[in-house]
Length: 186
Ligand code: ATP
Ligand code: MG
Image (tube, rainbow, N blue to C red; front, side):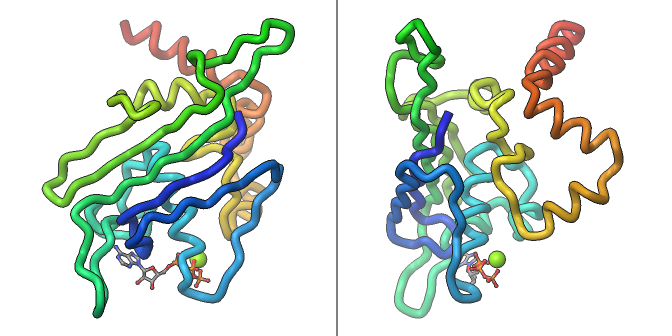
């Protein structure tokens, strides 16, 4: 699964809709002057993948992610982020791993009244459905595909069990651990 683009509207400093296309690049770096919104792009990625903690998104309440307005622009009513992924074609079968579309979009919306929704290909979905798609892919709120400032240092100094979790995700084991836990809960 390759992230091909992100569309952000009404989220943090992104008042007008912005679409960033990652094209065929395997590694993407976001650069720009202080305060231009680099970390907000990373926050948007984490948010759409299900981040539940406003603090992890550098806010007090979840509604803080909605564009708060400026001298010249009124605040937004809704924050909306959509990620676009190239679907994974299973080798030798010609089939896609998820559904039948070559592109999958994952969206999250939050309105000022607190109501919110997750979307897969523009159809309302549960966060669990989204998490299931990304299990084992390294993508996800806690995945290793988003390397933030300070993260390399945190990995190096983390406890062995935490480092093991990263290796398990990369090795494709974490999916089975989650399925096992779910089976025991039934
Ligand atoms: P640095 O290089 O310092 O890390 P950065 O490029 O990562 O900067 P961000 O932290 O992404 O910058 O963006 C900060 C800007 O986003 C600030 O100007 C802040 O006011 C603005 N911002 C954050 N939340 C909102 C919001 N809800 N509405 C409007 N603007 C917001
Ligand atoms: Mg920053």
